[in-house]
Image (cartoon, rainbow, N blue to C red; front, side, top):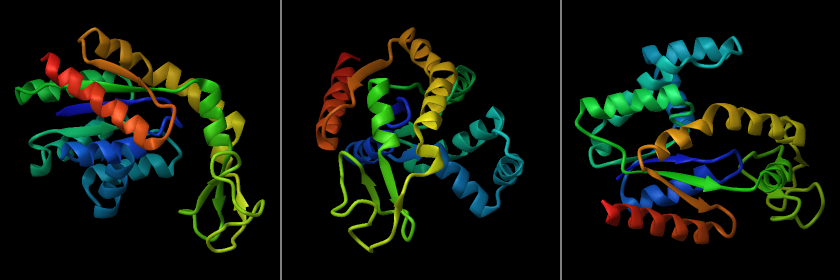
Length: 220
């Protein structure tokens, strides 16, 4: 299957993408991974992206599209892929359609993870990260440490990243509503969107997503 995963920040896209890609036997292609791989490998696109990022600017669509195209042409993506973070706007969605059309392919589904805005704010603003090891992540409500402000694993100090403040989260949500959410209507016009609730345990959301994708495949 060829799938686009969409949803607001804090919807759990990265977590769900990993599980879904594994269950479906297709690669998980995320924008963040594309940037990191191209920059670390010193590709021409990576150099262009780094120049924009170092200047504090957004990477232009054509650079992101070029990276995505290169990745989707790799052998492991021949039978499908799951795109996470791309396309991020309608012009990228149109470019993706053109890319696939040139290869006589098309998307099978666009999975829309739906989360109420207040829940998004609660999920992200409640995160606390360990200063010693950023892979140690806690939450003031959903994954409380045994001692306030102290990492259970290594004893490091837990803190809230600037990116996780409520004000920043609401700004990120506004950007999502303005730039990315319109692609849902774009794909609805093609009959590709399946919307599921991203509330509940990770495995419950995964099961819900797999059921929705299977139903979509059966309809074809």
